[in-house]
Amino acid sequence: MMAYLVFLGPPGAGKGTYAKRIQEITGIPHISTGDIFREIVKKENDELGKKIKEIMERGELVPDELVNEVVKRRLSEKDCEKGFILDGYPRTVAQAQFLEDFLDSQEKKITAAILFEVPEEVVVQRLTSRRICPKCGRIYNLLSLPPKEDELCDDCKVKLIQRDDDKEETVRHRYKVYLEKTEPVIEYYENKGLLKRVDGTIGIDNVVSKVLEIIRWSGK
Ligand code: AP5
Ligand code: MG
Image 1 (cartoon, rainbow, N blue to C red):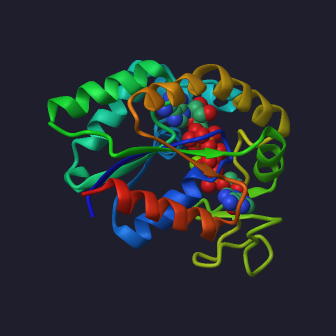
Image 2: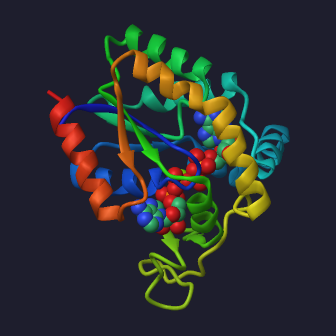
Image 3: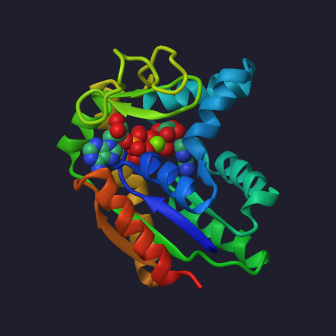
């Protein structure tokens, strides 16, 4: 299956959860810029690592030039030849334009931009109860998707952690940044006829089925 996908939506819309599932089912690689930056912060204790950490903890956006460079490198890897799921990128119109120019140069085109719609109060509830495995990145939720054993990853058996940017105040700020900087990206894809809207408040399995349907319809 060939698909070049963009997953759009506010923080906590479920982008990472759905992308991981779609990757398991279809083999299309899941690329999360948030995950890439969290890895950089964990490994690089230099100026750049510290700068990124500070930006993320405040819930602001990493500068476009840096994000674009990181994405360009990742998309140039071999596993992206047959497709990708971009989760959390593009987040500004400048990033969307950069992505389009980059794909043009490779004679590729976005297949669909899927927007997961979730209201602010659902976002706040989901993110304050989210937990992740620090080892494998699996995403849990204490309310809707709890681990089998008390706050331990089902697979790795290590203690789950909370993301530094998942405090209520930071979540609300991230949502505001989303409205301001990322909502224009919705219109960008709508104008190109690529936007597909999916209700992100229905259960995870239902959302995943809808996404698979979209991939089948829009892919060749
Ligand atoms: P990033 O990591 O991308 O965070 P985000 O966009 O804010 O999104 P989240 O990861 O918080 O939510 P999600 O939609 O993946 O939801 P999840 O599946 O976990 O970015 C972090 C930071 O990095 C940014 O703030 C910025 O600083 C920087 N950054 C990253 N990309 C950048 C870019 N392009 N430009 C500039 N800066 C960038 O699900 C959430 C919870 O809900 C889970 O607990 C899950 O179990 C639960 N859940 C999911 N779906 C459902 C459902 N359907 N029903 C019930 N519960 C559900
Ligand atoms: Mg995510």
